[in-house]
Image (cartoon, rainbow, N blue to C red; front, top):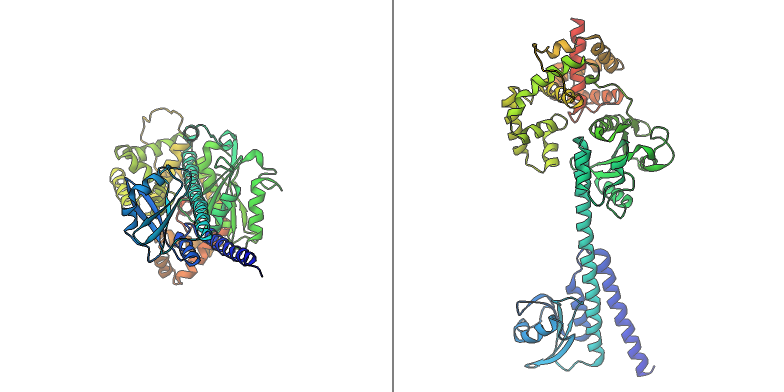
Length: 500
């Protein structure tokens, strides 16, 4: 074999080793380990190598092989400044007994400098390997910058989607549009939407949201939001005009989500009814209840059955008078405390804290202010149910009404109407008596399963099994102590009053 062939094979082997190391770093590391590349160059050339950043006329070693002389950046400061500012692309010099070679990385100032210190004059091949390594490090740094920019964009897009969803949950479509000026998602033009709530592992929901995301950071005509409260929930607002057959068609986002559930045994899907965009909160509530039923359904998919809400069957003016009388003292509390209270009526306090990025102690402090204003204990389930009903009545019937000039009726009086009785019968009718009994004792125990179990003479697990069975039959979410629990409180109150 000729000397030229040996040299060629040596170069090819060296290049293969460099590319293998680069491939490993690019594939398996978010931030490539530059030192491994520097150590590869040391093994190849015998030089001690460092990557030096230059700022304010001084060089700072970012990464280096173990025996790189740390005095070099100071003794070569003038040369490093010229390299970093773009006056030179490469340089060769001597520093005492060392032969120093330096090459810049990248096109933008201030440029990092790759510095190699040889104990002897490097041969042309070793100098070439220094240049090749500088080029590879430039590409790796650009890739790292791209990854950081991509992650930053994904975080920003995710935060924007959450903000849009929160505005829609508050019924403020105009605010959602104002937040997205310049890139208004098509969903905000949709006359009606259906909310699909997908239960899946947290890593999967992030992957699904990214895979479906378009260039604007949204999802075509729809909006997929990683729930900030429940890490295994993906909230999917789907434009109704994209659906067929009430959201059960073979095409569109809804069909895609159903296929995911079919193909993944750990998934479940709850689907709301059709709602105008300002009623997104009602759609979310329905999807939450449907998801509770879906977990026990054979195909793990459930559509909300369309039961009328209690506020829809109560006499309009008396119910609104009662609600506004109950809530009037809340106007004396700070606005933030009132907003926290509204959220805390539909989800646990820890969930409110995560949603608003507050500590649980801060949420508790806001609720205590609301309790003092209302003169009620918001840790008591019947109180929460009453306040939630009042909030629902006040928000759903916000049109101006005549001033209350008479003493408002009580909640007990409102719940004794024939329509309220029919509503309660429809809700509780499908349940066997033993489950109704468990629900009643559970509510009497302020939703403490252990206390309920003691009263019933059964185990805590049996109580929870009865609750899960009731969730499935009723299509209500009970175990998260949200609005499904409030419905049970009112239905049991009505049923008990009608039998007395």
